Length: 492
Ligand SMILES: [Zn+2]
Image (cartoon, rainbow, N blue to C red; front, side, top):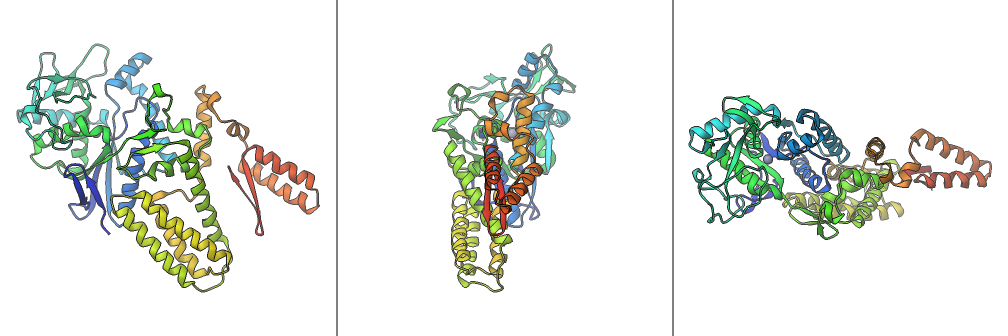
């Protein structure tokens, strides 16, 4: 099965296969580490995670490189305001970023590349651009890309650049301009700013040159896929193409994937709107990491996602259904044999699931057949028509589902605990949901002991004590489920 993925460059759906027949070489623009990541950032990283997991499920090896932008305008501004060098300012946010990715079960790329550790590669690329006549130095010692040297500029974003002014320059990393300008490759050192002494002068790299230099360092001059948020298409990705192809005269990335922005409650997320959320904000409100993951990946990457708290509640309920079903199938005592109807339903679910993902990663359509299968199987179990041979195939297809979605195994406690600890340390105790505060320090062992005590109380017909324990647990967000196999508990 081959993934058919929309390609921004060609403007159509193209097959995505490794050009070398071995591993799919892909580059994804990583974070600029000046603050905690918000859910819009994480939607992009999660959708790229869906991509790499699906590729692997279809047997494609992946070589995925992601950069960490640990020097740029914002970092320099913020670290100066904090009165510390950038090398002391960024580590906290790098660590937080990986902790958040871990909470969301986003797989680590095979290669992480930090900008500040690749200055020589950037300098070398700028020297090559200068030799090719595509870069020039200004009086202050900065270097710029000469847009007029790359007539194909605009081919990715399909922007009309007829208003392009020859020789007009822009020196900030991020800009939104209808007409393009020569952009900064290297910025001359300013007093007090972090800078490097290099053959092209003392200074620091611009943002765009980082990604060209580091992607080609690890993936070669031409590679299979470049991915990122839609906000990076122009000018960042356009500039990456210009910088790379002006030197190599080869296609830079063959395939470009852009993940759409999300809205929150129908509006663009903004601090000024009061609808701006980091992952940590949501965890502190009591939402589970798995529910956040599912809510952010369930709308296909090319569609605008309208994020709401209802969507988190819906995701949480869906995960509960999956986990309960998984446990029911795994632990139930089943007679030998097979039910033809279930066998057929499993085959259909698997085919539809894979086809939906292969069709431009349609995660919404991929979910549907799995939940259909769940309903059919639950009915069969209720009616005694579900057998050991059905269990094997059902668990197999659930495994394929989870190879991409990764929400069935319950690993939600740790991210929540870490977020609570972090909030306590960061003076944000007031933001912690009351039920999370109530169960702080309430370990699995303490819960198990209370559950056991309740069972004993019921045996000796002390229902007052048994009810007391149930109430105490409920106040701490622990739900008990009595079944014929004993008592199960879970966190709300
Ligand atoms: Zn980039």
